[in-house]
Amino acid sequence: MHSSNNSQPMRTAITPTRSVDYPEWYQQVIKHADLAEISPVRGCMTIKPWGYAIWEHMQRIMDDAFKAIGHQNVYFPLLIPLSFMQKEAEHIEGFAKECAVVTHHRLAKDAEGKLQPASPLDEPYIIRPTSETIIGEAFSRWIQSYRDLPLCINQWANIVRWELRTRIFLRTTEFLWQEGHTAHAMADEAMIEARRMLDVYTEFAEETLAMPVIQGEKSASERFPGAVNTYCIEAMMQDNKALQAGTSHFLGQHFSRGFDIKYLSQAGMEEFAWTTSWGTSTRLVGGLIMTHSDDDGLVLPPRIAPLHVVILPIIHKDVDRDSILAYCEQLKAALQQMTYDNRALRVQIDMRDLAGGEKAWHWVKKGVPFRVEVGKKEVEAQSLFVGERCLPYKERYTQSMQAFVATISSKLATLQKTLLERARTRQMQYTKIITTKKDFYDFFTEGEGGFAVAHWCGDANIEAQVKTDLSVTIRCLPFAMQGQPGTCIFTGKLSAQPAIFAKAY
Image (cartoon, rainbow, N blue to C red):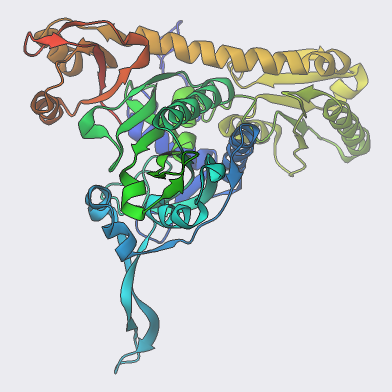
């Protein structure tokens, strides 16, 4: 990043910058925003208060949305009997290499006094990689009649998948998520539910995270193990890679047959239920970082920010302390009377004994939308010195307290909208319709990459070859392009609709 006036590089809070080393920039944003850190446990992370506050806001907003359409929260055990997993062969095949297995139930000292696993279990347990099997067993007991349907539940939980390559928030051995599970009397009801939940995720991603997404269906090779159809939302990060931000699965009767989930129909016939599952995870925090953040650190859309406004008292002489702090408290009280997104503004006074610049940069890197500096001059003028996170640091301005308080809600709404529009413009800029195989390969080898929209005949061998050659996968068959037949750019055969190809996290 360079200034427009000379060739001297501009100073940034984060080094390296996005353009120099994007993966390392991502790690440094997390470090400087104090979101999370690598834990002593292989592949796992410790989520710190600021990072967890962001996740808590995500939970609250999604949880409200789930409950508004009739889902109830439950909790199932972390440990799943191995026999449960074996009941659904395709499912266990899909997760076998990622499973962590508990084989013993206590520790004992060996001859050298070192602790060792002891007392083998009669049946090993799988630490849940997902809960379809244990929930399927419960559904088989909870559902007896058509009157018990639909059954719609959700759980907030942790998951363990033994990943080879991990990256904080994006792919860790243990992560936090929600998983919804439903059972229905009719196939079309289950299909409608799976699509409806994808719409819920889409609204959350775009309206709360300001992260534009593309809805579509996964190709057969990318489906969730045991699903008939997997639907997804795909977002573009600032390095032009795709991030799968949420999935919803129509499971057909696979799990119902495996776990004997039957109900007595109105006609008095015993039928297998039709089921769905759907989930999002702390990977959304990683997506949030990579969608909006810049070379000065984290950038947060107001709807998800733990704080909307941070007030920074600037005290040079103790004689001014009481009047400055009283003014800050007055400002905080006035702001907390205001609302944004139907909730009171989240405001904090930073009372730490630090220099003003150090305080300000601390909150810049944490992504707080508005910083307000208050010193003796501001108290005397009944004004504020305001910094906006999405403006350059030096573009701070003076505004009266009254005007700032009166306009803060509209400013937050404008910022939320601006971040979505900015991300959507970028997504469109790096999405290209491609009509030849050569242009396709050039797009991913010679250009900046992005989303390639191209016709594909459905041949899984071609899909695998593209993945081998370019590390590019089909992200989805977009709903918006259904019913647009064409010619496959790889074979010349008929294609039912275009696919979106990209490198991905």
